[in-house]
Length: 221
Image: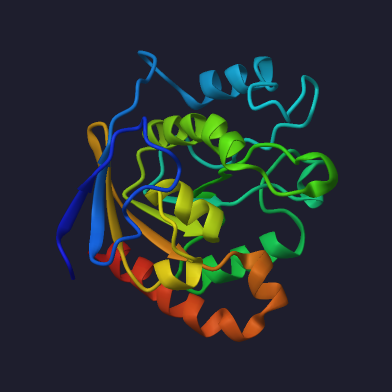
């Protein structure tokens, strides 16, 4: 594995230099309120849900689910219409497939902390802009520091690109294990395909299985 390091400050744009061939490690420092918790982050999101200019006060916030501390964190791209009723991520068919994927490596969803990069559904279910993702990104990083996972599975291009600040597609990013040092915490990032994508393109399940086997191996160490 290449060991070239990439140190990027949190002030750079979403897509930094980790797209350069061979870079698999990066570091980032962010400001975190003293004694930060998942409950505090959620309260701030609900009171400031207009922060990116798209989410409006009163809109459902699909924040996350799972234990406050977890060895494995699962991060998707953004919520879907199936998530609105429960205000929990990965509901519906995509969630059912995610549970099966985790069960295949002997992991229960209840053991993992599960969330998305984006916390609400944009009007018309359009894609978010880079600026809107950047506005939401600090909340995701705070969630990561609160949960302190050892391994993160990044499901889909938006999740992997947001964590790694990469221009690469998910097909280009998957197949590698990345190291992210966030403040005082180090974790491994395993990019793979989003379950919703796998429902549409089932022939990619074989590649996703190879990624999940890497996760299983890391958990067994």
